[in-house]
Amino acid sequence: MPAAKTRVVVVDDSALVRGLLAEIIDRQPDMCCIGAAADPLVAREMIRNLNPDVITLDVEMPRMDGIDFLSRLMRLRPMPVVMVSTLTERGADVTLKALELGAVDFVAKPKIGVSDGLRQLGADITDKIRTAAKARVHRLPAPPTAGAGDAGGARVQAPGLASLGRLSTEKIIFIGASTGGTEATREVLMQLPADAPAVMITQHMPPGFTKSYAARLDSLCRIAVAEARDGERVLPGHAYIAPGGHHLRVERSGANYIARVQVGEPVNRHMPSVEVMFDSAARVVGRNALAVMLTGMGADGARAMKTMKDAGSFNLVQDEASCVVFGMPREAIAHGAAHEVLPLKEIAPRLMEWLRANAGLATSRV
Image (cartoon, rainbow, N blue to C red; front, top):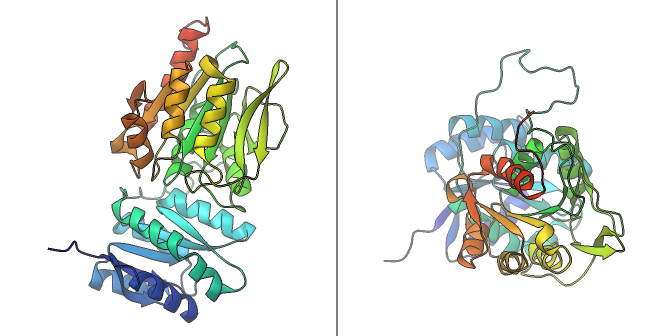
Protein backbone atom coordinates (compact mmCIF):
# COMPACT_ATOMS: atom_id res chain seq x y z
CA MET A 1 0.00 0.00 0.00
CA PRO A 2 1.54 3.37 -1.01
CA ALA A 3 2.44 5.80 1.76
CA ALA A 4 -0.02 8.62 2.37
CA LYS A 5 0.93 11.92 0.74
CA THR A 6 1.85 14.94 2.84
CA ARG A 7 -1.18 17.24 2.68
CA VAL A 8 -0.30 20.94 2.40
CA VAL A 9 -2.32 24.15 2.69
CA VAL A 10 -0.77 27.24 1.07
CA VAL A 11 -1.51 30.64 2.67
CA ASP A 12 -0.46 33.69 0.61
CA ASP A 13 -2.23 36.88 -0.46
CA SER A 14 -0.76 36.66 -3.99
CA ALA A 15 -2.82 34.56 -6.39
CA LEU A 16 0.32 34.08 -8.50
CA VAL A 17 2.33 32.72 -5.57
CA ARG A 18 -0.53 30.50 -4.42
CA GLY A 19 -0.78 29.00 -7.89
CA LEU A 20 2.97 28.50 -8.23
CA LEU A 21 3.35 26.89 -4.82
CA ALA A 22 0.39 24.59 -5.47
CA GLU A 23 1.92 23.60 -8.83
CA ILE A 24 5.33 22.90 -7.26
CA ILE A 25 3.77 20.83 -4.46
CA ASP A 26 1.44 18.85 -6.72
CA ARG A 27 4.33 17.83 -8.99
CA GLN A 28 5.84 15.85 -6.11
CA PRO A 29 4.81 12.19 -5.82
CA ASP A 30 4.75 12.32 -2.01
CA MET A 31 2.74 15.51 -1.38
CA CYS A 32 -0.33 17.39 -2.54
CA CYS A 33 -1.78 20.87 -2.10
CA ILE A 34 -5.25 20.38 -0.58
CA GLY A 35 -6.11 24.06 -0.29
CA ALA A 36 -4.91 27.63 -0.89
CA ALA A 37 -6.03 30.63 1.19
CA ALA A 38 -5.62 34.32 0.43
CA ASP A 39 -5.59 35.41 4.08
CA PRO A 40 -5.33 33.92 7.58
CA LEU A 41 -9.05 34.09 8.30
CA VAL A 42 -9.81 31.89 5.29
CA ALA A 43 -6.83 29.71 6.24
CA ARG A 44 -8.20 29.21 9.75
CA GLU A 45 -11.37 27.62 8.39
CA MET A 46 -9.41 25.62 5.84
CA ILE A 47 -7.12 24.19 8.52
CA ARG A 48 -10.10 23.33 10.70
CA ASN A 49 -11.92 21.55 7.87
CA LEU A 50 -9.04 19.92 5.98
CA ASN A 51 -6.60 19.09 8.79
CA PRO A 52 -3.39 19.49 6.71
CA ASP A 53 -0.01 18.02 7.68
CA VAL A 54 1.93 21.21 6.85
CA ILE A 55 1.08 24.79 5.94
CA THR A 56 3.17 27.33 4.05
CA LEU A 57 2.55 30.82 5.39
CA ASP A 58 3.32 34.22 3.90
CA VAL A 59 4.72 36.74 6.36
CA GLU A 60 2.84 39.84 5.17
CA MET A 61 -0.90 39.47 4.46
CA PRO A 62 -4.13 41.47 4.79
CA ARG A 63 -6.66 41.21 7.64
CA MET A 64 -4.15 39.51 9.96
CA ASP A 65 -0.40 39.37 9.40
CA GLY A 66 1.41 36.06 9.28
CA ILE A 67 3.09 36.54 12.67
CA ASP A 68 -0.18 37.17 14.52
CA PHE A 69 -1.75 34.17 12.80
CA LEU A 70 1.25 31.95 13.54
CA SER A 71 1.23 32.99 17.20
CA ARG A 72 -2.44 32.05 17.56
CA LEU A 73 -2.02 28.84 15.59
CA MET A 74 0.91 27.60 17.70
CA ARG A 75 -1.01 28.26 20.92
CA LEU A 76 -4.31 26.72 19.86
CA ARG A 77 -3.42 24.07 17.24
CA PRO A 78 0.34 23.61 16.90
CA MET A 79 1.36 22.20 13.53
CA PRO A 80 4.35 22.29 11.16
CA VAL A 81 4.66 25.65 9.39
CA VAL A 82 7.10 26.74 6.66
CA MET A 83 7.24 30.54 6.34
CA VAL A 84 7.53 32.24 2.95
CA SER A 85 9.53 35.43 3.49
CA THR A 86 10.84 38.28 1.36
CA LEU A 87 14.58 38.90 1.06
CA THR A 88 14.55 42.22 2.89
CA GLU A 89 15.91 43.31 6.27
CA ARG A 90 12.37 43.60 7.62
CA GLY A 91 11.54 40.22 6.09
CA ALA A 92 14.53 38.71 7.90
CA ASP A 93 13.53 40.22 11.24
CA VAL A 94 9.95 38.99 10.92
CA THR A 95 11.09 35.54 9.80
CA LEU A 96 13.30 35.19 12.88
CA LYS A 97 10.30 36.12 15.00
CA ALA A 98 8.32 33.37 13.23
CA LEU A 99 11.02 30.80 14.04
CA GLU A 100 10.93 31.95 17.66
CA LEU A 101 7.16 31.34 17.68
CA GLY A 102 7.60 27.80 16.41
CA ALA A 103 7.75 27.84 12.60
CA VAL A 104 9.90 24.90 11.47
CA ASP A 105 11.71 26.66 8.62
CA PHE A 106 11.40 29.35 5.96
CA VAL A 107 11.82 29.93 2.25
CA ALA A 108 13.17 33.26 0.99
CA LYS A 109 10.81 34.54 -1.72
CA PRO A 110 12.61 36.52 -4.49
CA LYS A 111 11.81 40.25 -4.62
CA ILE A 112 11.66 40.31 -8.42
CA GLY A 113 10.97 37.61 -10.98
CA VAL A 114 8.71 35.79 -8.52
CA SER A 115 7.46 33.24 -11.06
CA ASP A 116 10.88 32.07 -12.28
CA GLY A 117 12.42 32.55 -8.84
CA LEU A 118 9.94 30.31 -7.06
CA ARG A 119 10.22 27.62 -9.72
CA GLN A 120 14.01 27.62 -9.25
CA LEU A 121 13.43 27.25 -5.51
CA GLY A 122 11.08 24.30 -6.04
CA ALA A 123 13.47 21.65 -4.68
CA ASP A 124 14.26 23.77 -1.63
CA ILE A 125 10.57 24.42 -0.92
CA THR A 126 9.55 20.79 -1.21
CA ASP A 127 12.55 19.58 0.83
CA LYS A 128 11.52 21.92 3.63
CA ILE A 129 7.92 20.74 3.48
CA ARG A 130 9.15 17.13 3.79
CA THR A 131 11.30 18.07 6.76
CA ALA A 132 8.47 20.02 8.39
CA ALA A 133 6.11 17.05 8.06
CA LYS A 134 8.49 15.03 10.28
CA ALA A 135 9.33 17.81 12.73
CA ARG A 136 8.38 17.98 16.39
CA VAL A 137 6.25 21.04 17.09
CA HIS A 138 5.31 22.26 20.53
CA ARG A 139 2.44 24.33 21.83
CA LEU A 140 3.43 27.96 22.33
CA PRO A 141 2.93 29.13 25.92
CA ALA A 142 0.30 31.77 26.57
CA PRO A 143 1.66 35.34 26.37
CA PRO A 144 2.62 36.97 29.67
CA THR A 145 0.05 39.21 31.32
CA ALA A 146 0.32 42.92 30.72
CA GLY A 147 3.34 44.40 32.45
CA ALA A 148 4.98 41.04 33.17
CA GLY A 149 8.64 41.08 32.22
CA ASP A 150 8.31 44.56 30.74
CA ALA A 151 11.67 46.27 30.86
CA GLY A 152 10.72 49.36 28.92
CA GLY A 153 12.69 48.24 25.88
CA ALA A 154 15.81 47.55 27.93
CA ARG A 155 18.08 44.63 27.12
CA VAL A 156 16.54 41.54 28.77
CA GLN A 157 18.68 38.53 29.64
CA ALA A 158 17.81 35.14 31.04
CA PRO A 159 19.71 33.85 34.07
CA GLY A 160 23.10 32.64 32.92
CA LEU A 161 25.83 30.35 34.19
CA ALA A 162 28.46 31.53 36.66
CA SER A 163 31.54 33.34 35.39
CA LEU A 164 34.50 31.16 34.57
CA GLY A 165 36.85 33.63 36.28
CA ARG A 166 39.85 32.81 34.12
CA LEU A 167 40.28 30.56 31.14
CA SER A 168 42.86 29.84 28.51
CA THR A 169 42.08 31.72 25.30
CA GLU A 170 43.07 28.55 23.45
CA LYS A 171 39.59 27.03 23.92
CA ILE A 172 36.93 27.49 21.22
CA ILE A 173 33.36 26.15 21.09
CA PHE A 174 32.06 25.15 17.64
CA ILE A 175 28.30 24.81 17.04
CA GLY A 176 26.62 23.29 13.98
CA ALA A 177 22.87 23.47 13.38
CA SER A 178 20.19 23.50 10.69
CA THR A 179 16.39 23.14 10.88
CA GLY A 180 15.25 24.32 14.32
CA GLY A 181 18.76 25.52 15.07
CA THR A 182 18.13 29.25 15.32
CA GLU A 183 16.26 28.78 18.58
CA ALA A 184 18.43 25.90 19.81
CA THR A 185 21.58 27.98 19.35
CA ARG A 186 19.91 30.90 21.15
CA GLU A 187 19.16 28.57 24.09
CA VAL A 188 22.83 27.60 24.36
CA LEU A 189 24.31 31.08 23.89
CA MET A 190 21.96 32.81 26.34
CA GLN A 191 23.27 30.63 29.16
CA LEU A 192 26.96 31.37 28.54
CA PRO A 193 28.76 33.82 30.83
CA ALA A 194 30.42 36.93 29.41
CA ASP A 195 33.87 35.34 29.81
CA ALA A 196 33.02 32.12 27.95
CA PRO A 197 35.46 30.91 25.30
CA ALA A 198 34.98 32.11 21.75
CA VAL A 199 32.09 30.44 19.91
CA MET A 200 32.01 29.81 16.15
CA ILE A 201 28.61 28.92 14.66
CA THR A 202 27.52 27.49 11.35
CA GLN A 203 23.73 27.62 11.00
CA HIS A 204 22.24 26.78 7.61
CA MET A 205 20.76 30.15 6.54
CA PRO A 206 20.65 31.98 3.20
CA PRO A 207 22.31 35.35 2.55
CA GLY A 208 20.40 38.29 4.00
CA PHE A 209 19.24 36.61 7.21
CA THR A 210 22.36 35.97 9.29
CA LYS A 211 23.02 39.67 10.00
CA SER A 212 19.58 40.07 11.58
CA TYR A 213 20.00 36.77 13.39
CA ALA A 214 23.34 37.83 14.88
CA ALA A 215 21.90 41.19 15.96
CA ARG A 216 18.99 39.46 17.69
CA LEU A 217 21.32 37.11 19.57
CA ASP A 218 23.62 39.98 20.51
CA SER A 219 20.67 41.75 22.17
CA LEU A 220 19.87 38.65 24.25
CA CYS A 221 23.25 37.25 25.27
CA ARG A 222 26.04 38.18 27.68
CA ILE A 223 28.64 37.36 25.05
CA ALA A 224 28.93 39.62 21.99
CA VAL A 225 27.44 38.06 18.85
CA ALA A 226 28.09 39.15 15.24
CA GLU A 227 28.49 37.83 11.73
CA ALA A 228 32.03 36.60 11.25
CA ARG A 229 34.34 38.84 9.20
CA ASP A 230 37.20 37.41 7.18
CA GLY A 231 40.55 37.78 8.95
CA GLU A 232 39.22 38.99 12.31
CA ARG A 233 40.74 37.69 15.52
CA VAL A 234 38.63 35.11 17.38
CA LEU A 235 38.31 36.27 20.99
CA PRO A 236 36.80 34.93 24.22
CA GLY A 237 33.43 36.39 25.12
CA HIS A 238 32.45 36.62 21.44
CA ALA A 239 30.38 34.45 19.09
CA TYR A 240 30.91 34.46 15.33
CA ILE A 241 28.12 33.36 12.95
CA ALA A 242 28.91 32.16 9.43
CA PRO A 243 27.36 34.66 6.99
CA GLY A 244 24.77 33.15 4.65
CA GLY A 245 26.39 32.08 1.37
CA HIS A 246 29.90 31.81 2.90
CA HIS A 247 31.88 29.04 4.55
CA LEU A 248 33.41 29.75 7.97
CA ARG A 249 36.76 28.24 9.00
CA VAL A 250 39.21 28.84 11.83
CA GLU A 251 42.89 29.43 11.09
CA ARG A 252 45.97 30.14 13.17
CA SER A 253 47.97 33.35 12.81
CA GLY A 254 50.93 33.32 15.16
CA ALA A 255 49.55 33.07 18.69
CA ASN A 256 46.03 33.97 17.59
CA TYR A 257 43.05 32.26 16.01
CA ILE A 258 41.39 34.09 13.14
CA ALA A 259 38.13 33.60 11.26
CA ARG A 260 38.29 32.80 7.57
CA VAL A 261 35.07 33.68 5.71
CA GLN A 262 35.05 32.68 2.05
CA VAL A 263 32.74 31.81 -0.82
CA GLY A 264 33.35 28.32 -2.19
CA GLU A 265 31.57 25.29 -3.51
CA PRO A 266 28.63 24.00 -1.43
CA VAL A 267 29.55 21.05 0.80
CA ASN A 268 26.79 18.55 1.53
CA ARG A 269 24.62 20.96 -0.51
CA HIS A 270 25.26 23.74 2.02
CA MET A 271 27.17 27.01 2.15
CA PRO A 272 27.85 27.65 4.97
CA SER A 273 28.61 24.03 5.79
CA VAL A 274 29.15 22.57 9.25
CA GLU A 275 31.54 20.05 7.69
CA VAL A 276 33.86 22.83 6.53
CA MET A 277 33.98 24.52 9.94
CA PHE A 278 34.42 21.29 11.90
CA ASP A 279 37.19 20.10 9.56
CA SER A 280 39.14 23.31 10.20
CA ALA A 281 38.56 22.95 13.96
CA ALA A 282 39.99 19.44 13.95
CA ARG A 283 43.02 20.55 11.99
CA VAL A 284 43.76 23.86 13.74
CA VAL A 285 42.32 23.70 17.26
CA GLY A 286 42.50 19.96 18.04
CA ARG A 287 42.16 19.13 21.74
CA ASN A 288 41.33 22.75 22.62
CA ALA A 289 38.04 22.51 20.70
CA LEU A 290 34.56 21.76 22.04
CA ALA A 291 31.96 20.73 19.44
CA VAL A 292 28.17 20.86 19.65
CA MET A 293 25.75 19.38 17.10
CA LEU A 294 22.22 20.73 17.36
CA THR A 295 18.93 19.99 15.62
CA GLY A 296 18.89 19.80 11.82
CA MET A 297 18.03 17.74 8.77
CA GLY A 298 20.67 15.72 6.92
CA ALA A 299 24.22 14.68 7.76
CA ASP A 300 26.26 17.87 7.36
CA GLY A 301 29.14 17.90 9.84
CA ALA A 302 28.83 14.33 11.13
CA ARG A 303 32.02 13.00 9.53
CA ALA A 304 34.06 16.07 10.48
CA MET A 305 32.75 15.97 14.05
CA LYS A 306 34.22 12.47 14.35
CA THR A 307 37.49 13.88 12.97
CA MET A 308 37.37 16.53 15.73
CA LYS A 309 36.83 13.81 18.34
CA ASP A 310 39.81 11.86 17.00
CA ALA A 311 41.87 15.06 17.27
CA GLY A 312 40.98 15.38 20.97
CA SER A 313 37.93 17.64 21.09
CA PHE A 314 35.06 17.26 23.57
CA ASN A 315 31.77 16.71 21.71
CA LEU A 316 28.14 17.12 22.75
CA VAL A 317 25.10 16.18 20.66
CA GLN A 318 21.50 17.27 21.23
CA ASP A 319 19.14 14.42 22.12
CA GLU A 320 16.19 13.35 19.99
CA ALA A 321 13.46 14.42 22.41
CA SER A 322 14.56 18.08 22.40
CA CYS A 323 15.31 18.32 18.64
CA VAL A 324 12.92 19.78 16.09
CA VAL A 325 14.60 17.43 13.57
CA PHE A 326 16.98 14.71 14.74
CA GLY A 327 18.82 14.20 11.41
CA MET A 328 22.21 15.85 11.99
CA PRO A 329 22.50 14.73 15.63
CA ARG A 330 21.50 11.17 14.66
CA GLU A 331 24.20 11.07 11.98
CA ALA A 332 26.82 12.44 14.38
CA ILE A 333 25.96 9.69 16.87
CA ALA A 334 26.04 7.06 14.11
CA HIS A 335 29.54 8.23 13.11
CA GLY A 336 30.76 7.79 16.69
CA ALA A 337 31.32 11.54 17.05
CA ALA A 338 29.53 12.14 20.38
CA HIS A 339 31.04 11.95 23.83
CA GLU A 340 27.64 12.72 25.37
CA VAL A 341 24.04 13.10 24.11
CA LEU A 342 22.08 15.62 26.15
CA PRO A 343 18.79 17.54 26.23
CA LEU A 344 19.19 21.05 24.83
CA LYS A 345 18.91 22.79 28.21
CA GLU A 346 21.81 20.76 29.60
CA ILE A 347 24.32 21.50 26.84
CA ALA A 348 25.62 24.91 27.99
CA PRO A 349 25.95 23.84 31.66
CA ARG A 350 27.86 20.73 30.59
CA LEU A 351 30.23 22.79 28.42
CA MET A 352 31.03 25.06 31.38
CA GLU A 353 31.41 22.10 33.75
CA TRP A 354 33.86 20.45 31.35
CA LEU A 355 35.84 23.69 30.98
CA ARG A 356 36.15 24.09 34.74
CA ALA A 357 37.30 20.50 35.12
CA ASN A 358 39.77 20.67 32.23
CA ALA A 359 41.22 24.17 32.48
CA GLY A 360 42.39 24.12 36.08
CA LEU A 361 39.43 26.15 37.28
CA ALA A 362 37.56 25.92 40.55
CA THR A 363 34.30 24.00 40.29
CA SER A 364 32.43 26.12 42.82
CA ARG A 365 29.62 28.30 41.52
CA VAL A 366 29.47 32.02 42.35
